[in-house]
Image (tube, rainbow, N blue to C red; front, side):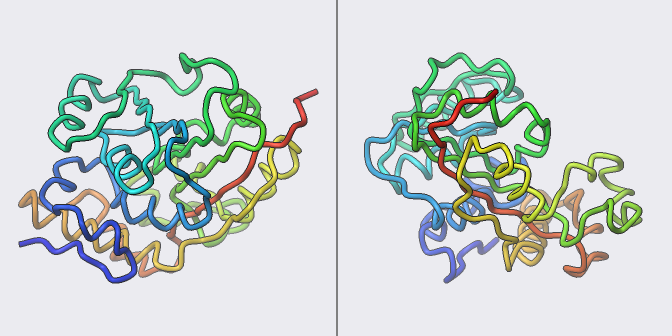
Length: 249
């Protein structure tokens, strides 16, 4: 029986491991979200966009643990599948199909936007922060958890072999927490609250890959990469910010 209970993640430990693994689309999303939420100020009744929500595990967690109203937006998972998951978990949330550059919401609609293990696919675009923050109220919160490098690939001069063998050039979108801090702060569109490498990032990622392998009966795709890395390069960046009143020029 897979055990995903961790004393450092008391909220996540309440959730059934088999259910969470059935929602698997990457490293444990609840561990990432619970850690990120320590840098956010989520209050009951807030309108929250769960961007790149996958099969909805993070949306269930947000609604249950913080009492927020959740809109779950994902491009690749059928929203009817996500809605069925919400119903089964007794959660009232909205599931929609949406591409990250064509979000179907009114400007300044959300109190917070969170993105767990998806921002690396679109958020490194220099123009994206200006677009995304239009959907946040002034003072609204933005929080992401995204695969990270301990050192920038540009500084290394290459993509480490064990990483390149699995993800290829896409690893160029895996940045340090300091990279994200500068990338956001220099725009003046947001005030960065926190930008940190997750101390347990590599270890948690490996633990999830091992649990996924056991649950599915086949090796998780990232297992070999993570075992080869041993925490030398890989982690997660947890970045949070508040929207300023300034507008892009």
